[in-house]
Length: 196
Image 1 (cartoon, rainbow, N blue to C red):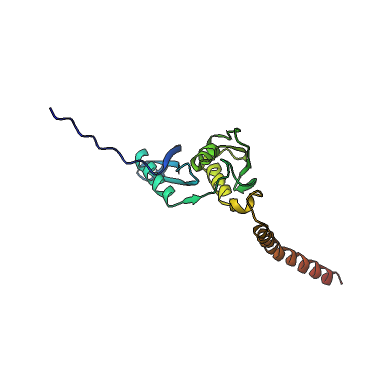
Image 2: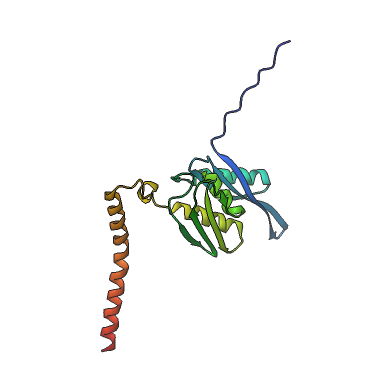
């Protein structure tokens, strides 16, 4: 007898996690039209992840569409010693997300939807707080956007940053703040003129 040859499946590039599946019912002239929406997070646990939300007539199709959408929405993130470079506070709609770096051995201190995004990126040590809404899609997208706003790790990490890089970062921050201060000064001048 000949031994059956088994083909080895190629390793998946991304780990996929379904966070939520919702049943959607739409009133139409002919009756109720039922569809399903799927919220999916994909990641390689090495600093690359994406989020996708899509709907279809059945659950399997909705998940496949959400994965496809997540692959077009990938973000790269630099991780230092298994954590993020600095603290982030982010608001998206009614969702408030706070993410703080944590020392080695702390683990992931986060709720379900925030934890899924953080683990997809491969962050091993982080402290987070979710405030406002408990809506899963809102919290997942808020966490994803918060991580997108992180500055480059090598500039932010003080032990690795060069003095010139720090100087450049400070100049960038000052340049961003100047237009606001110029507008405030102009408003003050206009108020003084209006009073007379």
